[in-house]
Length: 345
Image 1 (cartoon, rainbow, N blue to C red):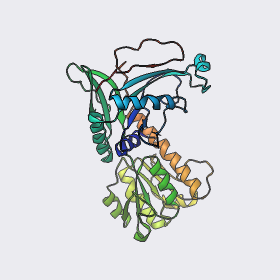
Image 2: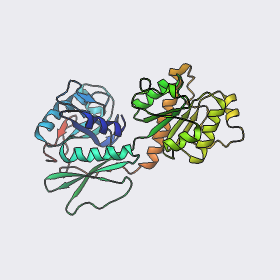
Image 3: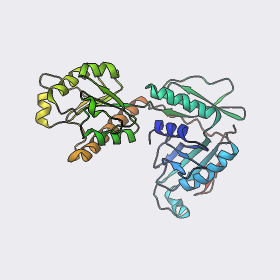
């Protein structure tokens, strides 16, 4: 799950919520630093997301209840290297050392996450900065990629990049738009559906989507499509799709995917440039047939493009500044070392 999805779910949940973040990895691991999930000690749902193939979550869930009850965060260090696998008895082959920070989502942290979510809705990424001042942990938001001095006497801790919520615009509300909408929404995209046929734009088909009706130029203006947006052109009407492509090209969105056969694509782009951000035909070449499979190929391409952009934007967005408690002593192979009280609130 994307960081925005984790933040959004944390703030929507009622009752106890504990955030688990991977803050350090040595060797191979299932997830990288910055990966996060939620534990819900008072809910039957139990947990949201994952940071391992399933080998760490049960132990972390047991610890999460104590973290919520005490209000103190906890760091847990798991040694999953092959020589210790017999001790764990999981045979998962992760082959690394993983450090996880558990924090109760309350007080200052909750307020910081709420502001980060608000920024993400506006298309702005944030960096959650943790600072230790005396015996307390303080949270603030900063701009990703920018080094900023901390408060006087504050020790920097692990930073967490909270990505903006990317928007996908579907131009064309035919039946093949439904599975694309469902998959994109599940991937954390904010989805807008646009069509010249207003009767197709219903909340029953596209719950939570932004709906807009009109011609190509009108829709581009009304939706404010820009460089950060992803667009799939799937109107299946040659002249209207061509008009939308012509309106989009000068705006240089992050991604423009166009549905259609190779022959249709040639007609649509006759006399028009096809920049790198245009993918036509849309979707990864997986031999997809039918709306559901084509939607999967489109979703896969959206992930690939988004990951590529995020990698370029956030090469230095996760920073590990060492132990929250001032040092990580070695422990016997295979042990899970906890540092309770490392970050009292």
